[in-house]
Image (cartoon, helix red, strand yellow):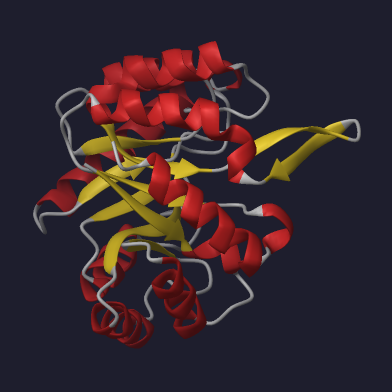
Length: 256
């Protein structure tokens, strides 16, 4: 089953209660709450409050979108224990983290080992609380490409570490779909957005313009037989009105 939702950092300027209201109005089922502003790391009061308002509105907490960078954050003053404690207060079943701050091809073996060792460590910590760890598929990390994500997955085989998937920006459909197929058994959730060329650069577009591609991605995702949250992120112009339009499209596409 594919469960439609929202990544809260899509609306960083809005308070949590307004985000809950928008998600309810849109008829979406879940929210990934961000750790940078809406539920700050270590702020258990905020986590409990957001958990309560989500539950009261019948909206599931899909995950805790932390900004913990494996191999780096612990030494920079963000202990994973604080991230985990906040996720528990939020009642999040999973925590999203980043795999360092370098592309695979730019990282030496020592950097990769530090990131991998830290991922295995935090995976074990989270497992004891029945929470999973998922890596964001993102540029300037060790999951910046299909090839690097698969290389990292091999190093983490059998651990409590999974992957969020999103289409790599600037890549064609065939490349994106191939990456999803090859990583499918380890995909927990997906971030949903459509970016395309505009005015000599890359711009956010209404989800409807990427409907053909996303319908195919969801067909691939549903073939796993598991449950996955598909959460809107980066709507055009940060517009609540655009979000509501995109949410209606997302709901139609996820009724597979």
